[in-house]
Each structure stands twice: as structure tokens, then as C-alpha cells.
Length: 212
Image (cartoon, rainbow, N blue to C red; front, side, top):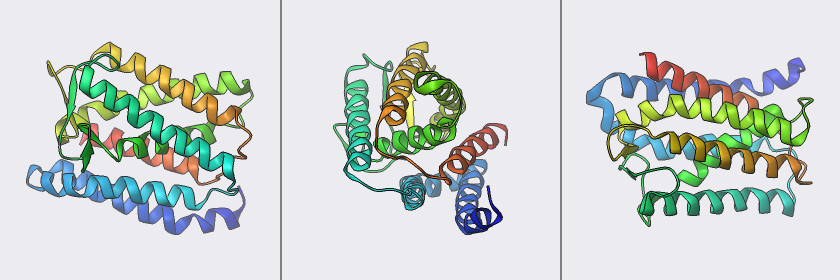
């Protein structure tokens, strides 16, 4: 990566890092939990907007794939939370904002941030589309292992018996694989040099949130 590109990313990296540090402070101190819950949906939207700002090429295919993943992931989550058949028995709290069909509207944004950023991270690896998608799915399931305790702690969602079922991780793996494979296999000219940083920021945030 050139010095110019690194310099160009300095401001968004600092801004997103500050945003996530604020989140860590709110998680660390129980008295600030309501602040975290209030800010969480806006955090996702800011990350998503920043991420898409650095997408190099825009065309119908890009919009169709991103819109398709948002809609598909929202429907999957809505079916999952209302039936318990996909991820297991769970319900969303108030930390992710406005809900439709008991499902936060931003949950599709969360899926987009994660699958899009990890897809760009593995895009140029030498395992082919499906091998790269497999690696990405493993990475996302590993990230979900870190997300779950934080999500439960902060009221994003709760599991029926207080434990995360294996079914959840299997579903994450399957849908992550399908979404990333679709993105990598498309002809939508995905190119975003900032996307890998976004995935790393998410990873570091949830690692720290688990240990602080």
C-alpha cells in the first residue's frame, strides 16, 4: 500500500477508532450502558457509510448485490428471531434500535459491514472464489464467538436459555459463506482498499470488549 493511500485513510481510521473507543468505555462502565445502547445503531450506520465511501466502482451489480445481501440477511434474521428455526431461540433487545417484525433494521447493515469487509480482505488470496469464501466464513464465525458475549452483555440480543447454541454458529458459517461467495463470484467490480481496516477494527473492538 502506498504512503498516499495510508495518509488518505488516516482520518477515517482515527474517527472510527475514537468511535469504538467510546463504545469500549460505555461497555466498561455499567452506568454508561444506556449511552452504548443509544449510540450502537448510529455507530453501525457511520461505519457502513464510511466503508461504502471508499468503494471504487459503482454500478448496478454493486448496488444489486449489496441491496440483495441486506434484504436477504434481514429476512433470515426476521424468520430466525420469530421462529427459532435458523439460529436458535433468541430475541433482540433495544440496543440495535428500531425493529420491524421484532428485527432491528440495522441488523442487515451489520451483515453487510462484516461480509463486505471480509470479502475484500480475502479477495486477492490464492484459494479461488470458494476457497477464499471458506476462509472468510471461518473468520466471521470466529468473530461471532467474540461478538456473542458482548451482545448479550449490552442488551443487543438474548438467548432463550442464556447459552449460545451451536446451531447459531453453523448458521453463521453457512450464510457467511454464501454471502461472501456471492460477492467474490459476482462481476460487480468490488474494490475497496479501506474495507480490510474496517474488519480489523471490528475484530480488535470485540477482542478488547471481551477482556476489559
